[in-house]
Image (cartoon, rainbow, N blue to C red):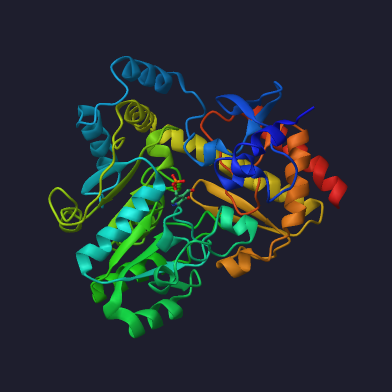
Length: 433
Ligand code: PLP
């Protein structure tokens, strides 16, 4: 009999529509999922799992929140797509700005890739310069200039960049080790007048979760301002997930508590949470820069489905449900899992480090210290992670199928969900010890 993977692979390259879903990082055949509700996903065979993938970030409220589902149903009944501006798009953009002051103007798009790709074009158009600086292990989607030393699925499959990206594109991308202030300062000293933008994940989450060294984002902001370049802060994953104002908000609050003036990005990209599981992403930033986008300015960007009414309804309903209580809950669950798993591993004598940025976290098995760079993160024991993944899958827990991804919790995770995860980790740890 043909297995699902055989059938899928006979029509979809690799059996999937996005590489990390193929389980190349952990081995084995992925089981298709059929539905999701709250903290749980159910596969096509009817087995239910505690979900720690959360659709790779959007499901911060838990899956199929009734209010979000109702908003989608009502919007769908009013028409699936108009190709004209709607009130809801304006409301979603206003909701984003109200929570994230540097997003003075907002352009809605459909994917994180589009948001970062547009940010790069806008930075080049605004500065008249070509060179982009990015950091090894930071993933910003799959547009050509950003597929150089990217993390995420590329980290998992060990491909540092992609075939099909021209040498010319790669030449205009300078890749630096993450967190290396000296390398960044030197790059500006050498290429300052050619640098259009520095793009960075607000906190890297695609090489495992990495807490940015204190002052690193501020230094990027400072150098960009001093040299006339644009700082692009990629909050596609961290935005409205790491905290109520993304990871930028985490650092802003720390700065304010320390009596320091917060730093500001020039452009910022969002995705995932702002669509609540539907295809919505956005680019935001300073008025002067954003005003260079068409139709106001000379930098072209467009989208048939941008600001789609049904997708926007899901995003708006999600954002409006994101109260302080939700973040407190998500944060408590993150503490319980990050701390609980770490204690179990430590008691079993299994060396590991915990990466943590706001409510986001991941584990680096086999590392003594939390990594800062992709080089550090690459030293983790991915084979041990694959064993952990399969052990937990067998125990009804759906972990990210790669050691280089964050574990995502939602407000819907309850004590019994966390207990199932911790029990399964304890059983696995006993077999490994
Ligand atoms: N930027 C970051 C930080 C991401 O984590 C991702 C996706 O995981 C993207 C950009 C690309 O977003 P999308 O997959 O919606 O194109």
